[in-house]
Image (cartoon, rainbow, N blue to C red; front, side):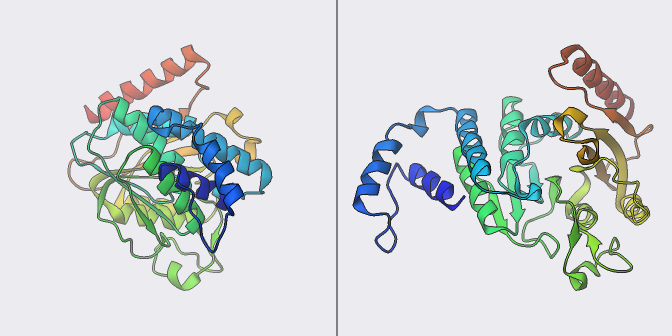
Amino acid sequence: MDALIETFDNMLDNGNVHVEDGLPDEETIQKLTKLYQQIDLASLSKEERRALLQLSLLQVYKKEKIQANHQMTPDTIGFLLAYLIEKLVTYKPGIKLLDLTVGTGNLLSAILGTLENKGWDDLALYGIDNDDTLISLASISSQLMESDTKLVHQDAIIDLQVPQVDVVVGDLPIGYYPLDERASAFETTAKQGHSYVHYLLIEQALHQLNDGGWGMFVVPKGLFEAPEAKKLLEVIQKYGYLQGLLNLPQKLFVSENSQKSILIIQKQGATAKQAKPILLGEFPLMKDRAEFVKFLAEIDAWKAQNFS
């Protein structure tokens, strides 16, 4: 992974090989320079550059065992989130969008590319992650997409070093948050033992949103089935509205237990109101075009009913 980061840093620096403490040696520098000359980043589109990074990451995943929470979010999920943002968020120049768990940056880049194709220009993008390797990859992704994304290397469970935003997204990590003292400041903290990190992050997002802002998160399919979920639901209803829960196609995941959903919440205030009914359902696979178009039409009808 470190070699991948160094290679892309070199290519973004016009193919100049960075040397530190005499490494790499002159022979390796010449080999690398020759290879870099075969890749003209300037001649590639933003999406081609993003694909180049994705394919390189997949090669890394074959070599290194990367935990699930650190792997890049598939493009399909990014496209669906971008679609929902386009439908539900009123566009205006300067909209602030935050990825609370930016990771490799692939989710944010997929959303950006899709929205730009829809004419959404001048977006203010922010990303947060506490892993220095992942934040380095997100920085590379941002440069390849020519976006001025403000990336912050910090724990997303403490006071965030970014402004209030209009949209928060995130492919939320699943598991327990180890620092109980920090978690105790949240209403979703566990009464005993460690708290669920994805609960804390959803609560954090609600506080970071502007009034009427939207949060869209990739979460476990059975998010509200755990006994502890009652507190999460109470917090969502206290500060916002639960507007939708859409299951992602099961075939995107290795097993039914690993299936995920997109949680849609809206912060109270401004013109926000509770949608009736809540948007529920399961996305068909994109390759099943007829069913997919039909499902998107159902989302359009739901939006017209509640937010026209």
